[in-house]
Image (cartoon, rainbow, N blue to C red; front, side, top):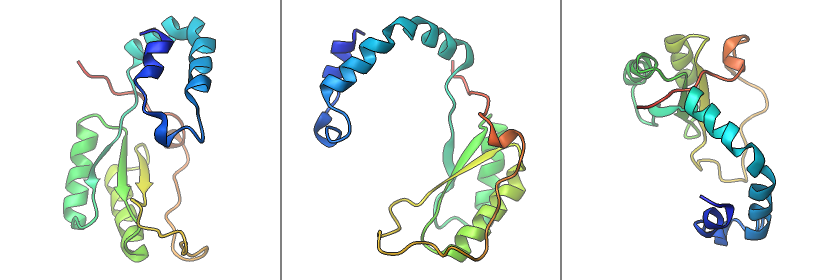
Length: 145
């Protein structure tokens, strides 16, 4: 799809304070020479994906663990947990997820608009550190057929 056609598909009403159609068109035109290479790389390696399936608020720890195991068995190298309703629950759920999937699987968190902007999580208190090693680097991509 030519850059002009691609830009024409985007509703910029909510983006124009950060990116205008003209700026988007300029970026696409400037990067067009490497497009074939990038497409080949995507076709060869796939596009990284994650699943939120295990991480919805309200799931029991047992359900979170079962769904996290299933996600890893299905080939996902990253899962995402919703957080923000209760800090103690968030820490417990994160610990459950990490113990379930191990250090080689990345875990993203999403506050799901639960923070109101006037409060922030405490700067001290319980934390679940990110593991060193492979999970800190880019995960292998999932491919679909």
